[in-house]
Image 1 (tube, rainbow, N blue to C red):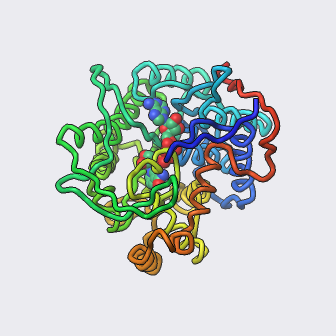
Image 2 (image 1 turned 90 degrees about the horizontal axis):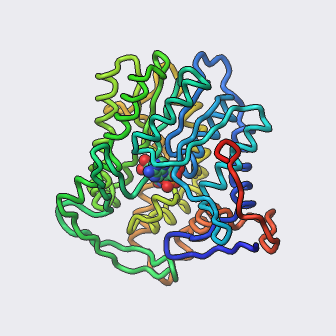
Image 3 (image 1 turned 30 degrees about the horizontal axis):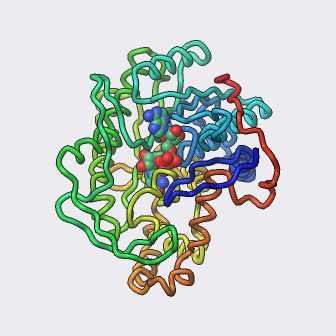
Length: 396
Ligand code: NAD
């Protein structure tokens, strides 16, 4: 079947299997092109990645596997093809990751299911016991719209402000017009729901379950990803519902360290990047496009894979990872540099429908967007019929 992108505002409902393979291969090639840091005492060998199929989690898995030679187990929530509809991109990415890992002689297995559930935790523990004995690193990179907790209650996350409405410029992704968007404040239960889904409760549940089952090495490392961003987006992000959840996640790192002193729990605050999760946040896509332009001009722009390679290389695997005063690793350091943000703000104030194509990197935004779904690679023949029912070696 010939596969074309079908875009609905911030989501694409199709994915190209060959393009997703190219997306993964390029990330692997980038990791391989980076020199391995010599003399490092601690490199992870058995890494569990929760949320491993797209965005930061996929880039983390590729960095652990191809950068450190680690065996990986990846957890994800993706849909295979039904023969008529394509699979989700994370499905194809994972198939490609496993194929490439196999060629490179790297262990890679994947579990497709709800990471919030007890069943997936148990399945993961059984697999670790059987194949590894113990894991030495756990990366928590989930971005989900809802979670059913262990009591069976389903919580839904919201992307809203807390307190008062927030009105800002925004870009209509259908036609690149600059519009004004108002985001309404969340009801209390929406704040609670977002904390339940995107906060740290499930991260703690995972670590507890792994510890109780005795499948974590002493001194194992666990890291979860957060975002803060500039003041410009505080009302919708850091002070909004999602920010409340991130504060909870950040606190959970401390809770894990206190409850399990031999687990090194860290937060890495990552850079703003177009991913399936972040493209859905109101106002933020215009910020991405402006930021991309400014950071590319300053030669400091990074994608998920460049961020994760720098995280592993410069920060996470150091004996004493460099952190801010709140104990967080800051991978948003370049994004938040004063000269970057003052330029972003200057552009933000000027940007209109007429000049947005010149002032913001709209092309860069869409390039990242299309790539996430396996489209827009010049070396993939999109005119060709492709097999869409692709299996993942460790699942089928
Ligand atoms: P993403 O949408 O690309 O990835 C989400 C992953 O979670 C996928 O692998 C998906 O399959 C998996 N997943 C979702 N629900 C699941 C479930 N119920 N069970 C199992 N797996 C499930 O998102 P992303 O942007 O890479 O986000 C990952 C983390 O990084 C999030 O915590 C996010 O807040 C954080 N982060 C993102 C940005 C950004 O700008 N994208 C910046 C900083 C931090």
